[in-house]
Amino acid sequence: MTSSAPTSLEFDRIQPYQDRRFVPEDADLLDVVTVKGLYRQLIDRPVSGTPGFEQWIQDRSELEAALDQAGSIVYIRMTCQTDDQQRAEAYTHFIETISPAVQPLDDRLNNRFLELLDSYPLDEERYSVYIRDVRTQIELFKPENVELQKQVSLLSQEYQRICGAMTVEFDGREQTLPQMSKYQLELDRDLRERAWRAVSERRAQDSDALEDLFDKMLAIRHQIARNAGFPNFMEYKFKSLHRFDYTPDDCKQYHATVEKLVVPLWRQISERRRETMQLERLRPWDGAVDPQGRPPLKPFSEVADLISGCERVFARVDPEFGEQFAAMSRDGLLDLASRKGKAPGGYQSSLDEARRPFVFMNAVGVNGDVFTLLHEGGHSFHTLACRHDPLIDYRHGPMEFNEVASMAMELMGAEHLDEFYSPEDKERARTSHFEDVVYILPWVALIDAFQHWIYENPGHSRAERRSKWVELFRRFNGGGADWSGLEAVEAVLWHRQLHIFEVPFYYIEYGIAQLGALQVWRNARQDGPRAVQAYKDGLAAGGALPVTDIYSRAGIKFCFTEDIIAPLMDAVREELNLGK
Image (cartoon, rainbow, N blue to C red; front, side, top):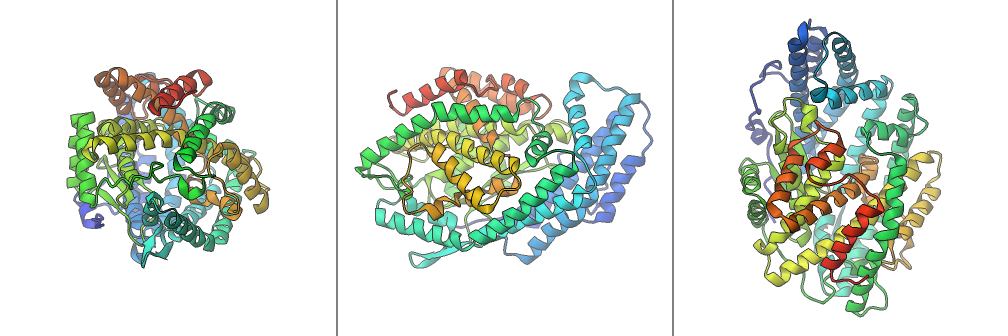
């Protein structure tokens, strides 16, 4: 399967959304002297009157967008080929040199902003979220944390390198771990088990290295929190993620409600699979294969077919989405195929000066690839929907709604999978996706509960951490696969979750947003055009409103209590033809 990763030249051809007013066109934003000089110009600029103040804010936004885009490009290029030394060095330079230099200057800009605000009040309705966020950033910034945050970024890059280098010799050739995933769809149970064990054995080779890496991250993060005046990293991170609308206790309510209402449904799904497959017990290699013994779904053979098929799906959800995705493909903003040296996973990254999205993933020709591209496409349309706002801060929504953008697109796009499949296979794909929806809600609870425990107990040992993971895994696994004899693999399954290593606490958003996405889907079943327009209205809000208001604009509720979750699970149960 071929790939067409963008080159730096192709990125250079992507034009800014608008001409620069403050940042010189030829400014080298990978040069620390240049970057610091631009920040100091803003810090020292005389400002008079509210119009001058607002122009100062917009010039700051322009600088931040240009710099963020420069950082995004070096990150994208590094993840597209983690074994390219030049790309690795460019990314390392950015996080070792540019980011640490900017952080204290950014704090000075924040303080200058508050000084100017005292003299030149701003429109409260327009700027309330912005002001709130600036105050939070000032509260959290500590100069001594700059070096520590750089160290965590470098450790995250090491995690990418370790995982990107994992390959196995299987079926007569060297294969990446994403490429190995397709064997879990094969009907031959012995083949599935051998592939599963081959991957697990390869991961085990780096298990100690990943544990060492995480221990280092944990110690640094705890110190960052203490430096900022917090008793633990959990409380620090909630503040830094701007979680103003819910608390750690609300997250724990999510855990408990999901355990009560969703885990039993997952247990039903697992039991139906076991019975259909006529197995005495389900094993970890039995969860992805078609339970009725049908061959794996094969939606495409080449990445080009994935792109064209998803373009048609997006266009059927809304013509504007199809046009936007076609432009992304045409402009080289997709790198989709798996290959050796490529970082794992998938993401959408915003090129903040161009106000364009870029999508990265590891497609190998399976059904999950279609849903991954639908997911990242939803993020892309979110980026494009709020590109009109002059403030970079308002062109990025709260994470709890960002994932509604992606997950709702999965659900709405699934209605048009006949672009890839026959009617029978389309229903197979939709059924599999709804089962995945049920699965992800407890998995999110598991990952979030694990991270709460990790950071609320910073002095824990490695053995205690593994024990807690197993305890929580068995609590939320809900009677799924039988892990007897596989306890060593079970104890380190969390190593596969890059969020735990790279973006701690960024995971509950997937659960909250999945509930929001299910509400969008339920609305679309009742009135498709109205639901899609409300969804687009939510996307267009960007980050200019509190998350609860953005949900309302999208026609849904920001809530994860029983009265919201129970009817959604009833609708999914009906979709899956499962009784109470």
